[in-house]
Length: 477
Length: 94
Ligand SMILES: Cc1cc2nc3c(=O)[nH]c(=O)nc-3n(C[C@H](O)[C@H](O)[C@H](O)COP(=O)(O)OP(=O)(O)OC[C@H]3O[C@@H](n4cnc5c(N)ncnc54)[C@H](O)[C@@H]3O)c2cc1C
Image (cartoon, rainbow over all chains, first blue to last red; front, side, top):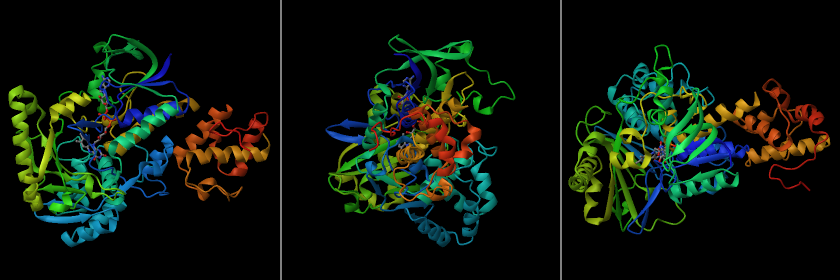
């Protein structure tokens, strides 16, 4: 079997690209190093329980029939019926910044009311800001896409606390850049979180992944798991195939990689790696040493749902300090800010059997990789306790959690790096993105994290968009 | 394919791409985008499906010709005349 396109990685972007290409009769094979598919948003079994490795919430909620929204577009492009997702909407979420609290849910009016209540002098600025967002039809990668969202925001909103309130959720849910967000990513995330909102497939991430995999197979695409790519083979600066960890070589016309930009370039013969000459697209500058933001997360299981002990939010973004800091922490974790969330707090047809609460904060990859094997387990428990103590300062109801915990799992930047291959366990990849999906090497396209559309919805769109632009539309010319 | 069958073929493709849209009362002379929600991504798909199902190549400069159902018939009928109708899912339309 000869393949047109090999796709490195069976995360959201790889699966979506695979479906698009196979749907139009391209022979597609997805190669995934791990035994499971899903990448950063996968699932696992531990002590008889099923866990989602990533899913807090599916952003960009769209009601059925809602035209022009990212979720609707993705489902159309992949030919997945809306009902199949069985989406349950969020109960309601909260933003807590230095003692101020703003509630929001899928009706955006609530957030605007809350913003006006907390920052009465800034609501007009917020409305002007949102009115100036580019439409979803604006071509990706416009001239101002890398602009600083912080700088843009300060042209509309004066109160630094109000700016921080907007930075907190958008950084945590999708910025690869310290203390800032790229402007285009900010507009996408603001819509994703506040204008469209959160939902969750009733069956968790596995049900979405099952739909994607079934669709891939239905259109003739293939997936091989336990199948890492160790080299990308080239001739005269253009891709000819890949070599697997097993030594097997597979020829192809084109490679799509969701492994990350630097990670992908490292699979090439160094002589083929494009040099970052001045004047070249800055996205192709060497990003191997750029700071990468990673996270520490705990999942606590309780017999009852969190609402039983007073936690009713779907998602809570919190920041305790006066200013919001979004940087690689100097210590193991930075528990000043983070996210609390619970899969129980979405609408469902049948309640989950147990309660689950997730806490997430920024973490320092180097710290976690330096730990000796005998220190690692204890360090995780200690960090999880400190993280919970900090989250409890923001949400006092969490003080009722510890005695109820039946089991707690934690993961660190080390876990993330192991399971995704992303350098530094970076959840959102390198700070500079290659929005047009080019890698600088012929017939090698970048999708997912380092193409620059982030989160579950972003990654799916990334795979679709690059498949459309680099292959499908190209074939019509 | 007759002219009527060209309309069936096009509607069948749109139904694949946009299963939520009601296609029963589409006007012939009104732009499709004004009657149902189709964006540029959907348009790419219509053209891709035409090629996949019927081997018809519509160059980008001619996309405008497909803006209305009447336009589709006018542009596509000469290209599809000698081809049998079959729907996107492969099952013949009764
Ligand atoms: C804890 C956590 C919670 C999150 N919560 C949410 C959320 O609630 N909502 C949301 O929208 N987003 C969330 N995200 C972000 C979201 O998961 C990611 O943005 C998205 O899944 C990225 O998809 P991707 O396809 O770009 O990359 P990945 O998912 O990283 O996929 C890359 C794949 O490539 C494979 N790979 C890498 N190198 C090789 C190689 N050499 N050979 C073979 N395979 C290789 C990896 O194993 C991996 O499977 C969360 C992320 C984390 C970590």
